[in-house]
Image 1 (cartoon, each protein chain N blue to C red):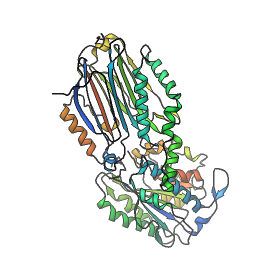
Image 2: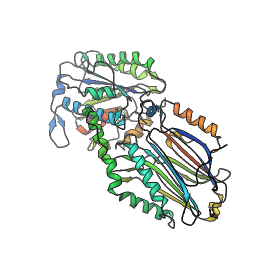
Image 3: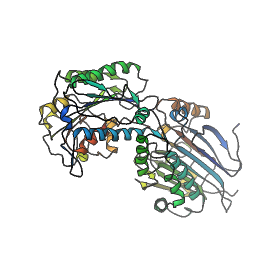
Image 4: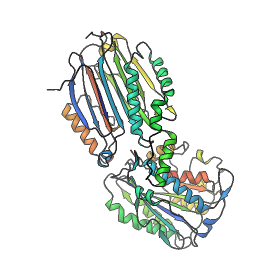
Length: 279
Length: 257
């Protein structure tokens, strides 16, 4: 039997966490979720932080409509402390999207607004990333390498998603995957991954943020699945796998010598989203 | 031959540098961006440090270095010196630092390639599965004394691994030997044919150079060298510091995670 959780909760996976969670029902909600967070073999064997970050929040808004936000961030491994950038961005995205922000805006406005906010990210958010100390007792070549990385900033790619009041909003940037599917697994929206786009703590958004909003009742009523994952899972179609098969697939990829951090989330809806229900 | 294997701590990329330290490498004819001149060997040392920093940066997770590269550094003139004292992982190389190089006498290029071949023959059978193809990066400033290195270089390029044949890159330092003027090396497109070269020795180096695999071309372009052609050989020639810097960058483009 699938485990159940509280009506309002925040789930965060980062650094050395390791979990593949089967379908989890939410009492009184009309969706369920499953997720996986598995650091790369290299991270595990060398006891280093994974570079991915996953956060999922769900609850009820002031009008008693159910809502959730999620963020998957993939820290750029060759940047300075990509793990810190991923964690900071994930937290910031969820905090930003959890509020009323975005309730009434179009996709274009969503993208512009997010771009502006990221460009003007407050110093108290960015400074701790850039101020991550370089240890004293390291060789000069490594110090030079870290200083060179720090010049271009800590970097992360990200996907943020939000559902509230019969509306889905997404913002995607970089080499991550996102699909919205109907009940027959036909695509209603697919984000095309982009290896060049990312956010840098020094330079802001490099490349582009791709916003997407689904708010017409007809399309919303067709939405049954949201799937998002980091590039460690490649481009496999995983939504139809059973929990056991998904776990087996993730473990197979994770055992490869060149495995990358893997983060996966799938949300399945049981009701039409076009007519938001009160809880 | 996919050349898709990533350099990881369990499947590190093996890179062998062959550095000509013959007497002529002391010639101060390298044009720096500021317009001043420096000696060939000083530029080689600087570029070696730059590529080491780049490899360390690409091997760093958090604040620790993953051993994603293994490096051998052979300097040669009349004889061959193993500068690092064996193959070192990039974290060991970072500890050790880039050695000082000083000009010597002769240019026995063949002996350097023979030593690289000996290392590869010993290493290739023991490479972990899914390792990237090894790379040999040779830097010289002139014609060789002694035997012809061409046949040894061909044998090396024919050595196969599951990821692909061993790659050989050549860097010629000297007055422009190309049949074209390269105003901005960062926008240079590379060489795809011997007819693009006017110097006989550099034509020989062309034949001793591998084509940069398509998967590496993309990574090379990410470093800012956007105009590199798909079929261009791993060969650089000139006395502009930016050209030499670009050549060293190429020696570190094995994919990483």
